[in-house]
Length: 560
Image (cartoon, rainbow, N blue to C red; front, side, top):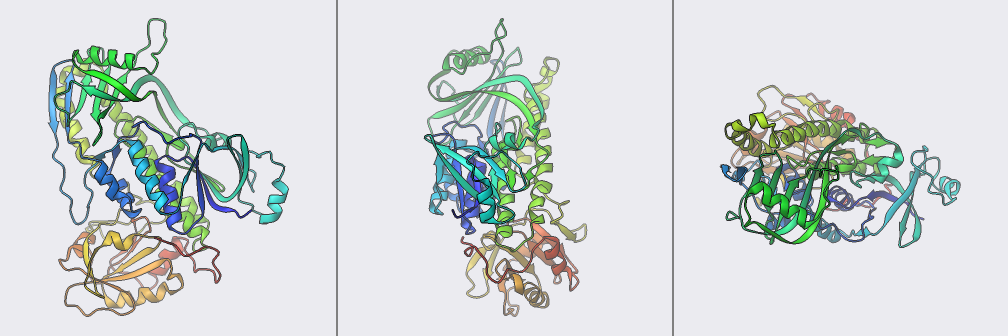
């Protein structure tokens, strides 16, 4: 039995992102999902700018843009009366940030787009396939109970990786993989079998969420938010390019303490009572579910050869639209690191930086989503102030979400040797920008050059370009050296020449003739130095745990 590189459990946005990223890098993986069919509910409803950049790199953003739209208008009601109508104009795309706005798109459609991209790359989701157990060479997880443990250990040497059992239609299968990734949601089987604490709180707050047809609202391009006199809320959000709306209604127990079930009748009653409008009618539900408020996360993202990502690692309030985005970005952070380690180009310590970088992001997001939940459900005493408080609050949040680019400035993979005047720092997302390729003067952009499995070295002088090319010659398959020059400058041989026709690249990075920049495979700046020493680049590569390729790599060349 030939072992896989990675077994992914869970085929939501997190698992699909990871599968696409690994397969395009030439790795072998399987992605299994215990549900028999794709999910149909909207659930997550927002893709933020950084996630759109990730999907650009994975080759799926054009489909997302066609299926989504910017929702810039929110009508906020306090009971029946309109409290305010908020319109925040969309930001115009620019050379440095081609996707400046958050987009409304239901999770089921995002998943469909990513499954289509996965199929193009040669992958497939195995629906109706359930993980029943696993164990690793270091004893983590649960014995799959197939009686083959000792033989597997002998086959694979001292470290057999992960041995998992899968069940589909009553048939059990044993699978071996170098790594296992649990992307299987808030009730993660992988997390539970590892015995990891899911620390936090579960509140009594509950809501009914559904995808239904809605008749009645006159402003069908806007999100409608109602707060009733008793503090309960109703949200109506139109689905782009579809006849359904996402409807959310907070719930309250009855006199006996029983909570309402997920039904169209309960939802219709809540909408009618809280809006004060009998003309808003809900019909033809495509999906209904009851959501309970949880604020939880783990403090260990890696246990040996097993990783957790997305909702399996952190769950929180839906306010702020962080859930789907955080999972996508978890997977994108982990994918390139797994690929480099599996291909022998980096040491195992690189995988520890996944937790180092992503756990602080989860903590920040949990706090922010809780803050937004509190703002949307304020105490009765301050409701007379809502017009003065909430309108600027919501406006600030929409504008802030345009800069939703988590940074890794304190990461061990970030080496910042720039001065305080630099517009970007190590650990920031690298800006995009237009350039011409020196070979044929064809137009391209930095994001296109960054796309793929490699690090990108940017220099701004011929001297440093030659030195950089010499330094990375043993890692040529994993680093691309580019020199950025002004029009009319003499091109440099042996490296990729980028002509900065309008000086935008130099300004975006605050570069000087001596500046040296390393962009990681996930588009983050790893190193920035305005006055690098001869050993600066080599020191950074060692800090990033990179090493020359073995003479006989066991994996195929990475594919785009």
